[in-house]
Length: 141
Image (cartoon, rainbow, N blue to C red; front, top):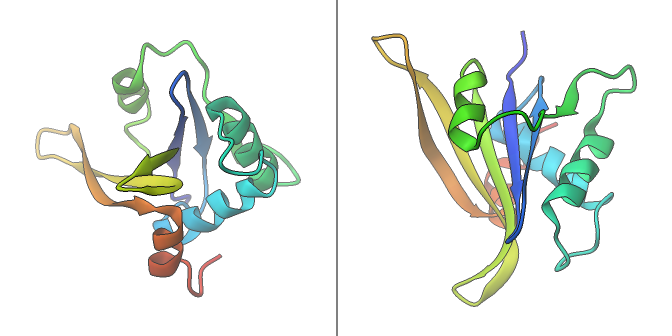
């Protein structure tokens, strides 16, 4: 059984979503994001659609099917999360200048089932990708 996730890549103009089926705990996700950097424009250039494509290219299983772009027929983020409530994690990846630091940032949300059967998404971590690599990157995928 996979640890499934939705990744949202956003810039000032666009948002693109990718579904990945396996190994999406933060310890794996940090390496999937790192791998995408090798296929994407060199930072600080960051475009959501281009980075989403780089993420797919870097992390696609050679046999296919494990990672794919999410269809654009959804009506925004809430609709995507409702339709993918069976996913375990939701990552938001963006490039920004916050507090004088120009860097790739990641927000991590985890899904928790409620007594009524609904899913609640809670932020469990946020910060720069470099900080995520320090915290979660050791000994992982």
